[in-house]
Image (tube, rainbow, N blue to C red; front, side, top):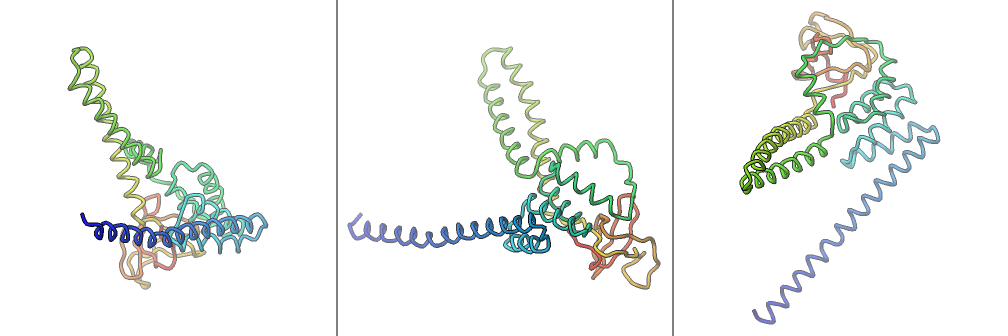
Length: 263
């Protein structure tokens, strides 16, 4: 390799490093800016200026960053403003990201006490409830990490089984492999379920004081029942500006899109 080529390589490398430096600095500056927004939002919250705190929290969300803690803080601010529908929405968003967030669970139940609709949920099948409880043990990142760890241990047991000379040890490794295989499958399936839930937005919170659920996606269709703000619904279908929704007791119907916030 000629001296000229070596010089060119070093020069190109220098340019690449120099080009990356502004991007890194900008990223660090952006991160600092987001942290400042959070600090200011929390400061206004502590001063009982909840409207202003929400403005700063929303600025963070506009940047594309979200977290369970941020939604929890927003929920608390809306709760202090007696906007229980928006408080419920943000607590639900926090729990979607972090299903074992106890503070969000407690505050969600407190906010629901201020809603009008007391809907008894349909009985859930044991297996469905059991699986949901397993999936909700960890958030998406924790499940992904755990699944990879389980898979690594599975490979270790497989290696030990195939290399074991002792028959007793080989038998032990075989049963350990089978157990770890089952756990690994559960881990990856739970990780997939959690990530799939995060990527779908088929739930919503009613944000208007009162809304009439229709039998069809049209204003002149038959009235079915009434819902009030703060009620959580499941979105089953979308037609133009209408959502087909289902509530916890299994009843369904159609509501205008503007009457709820989807999450």
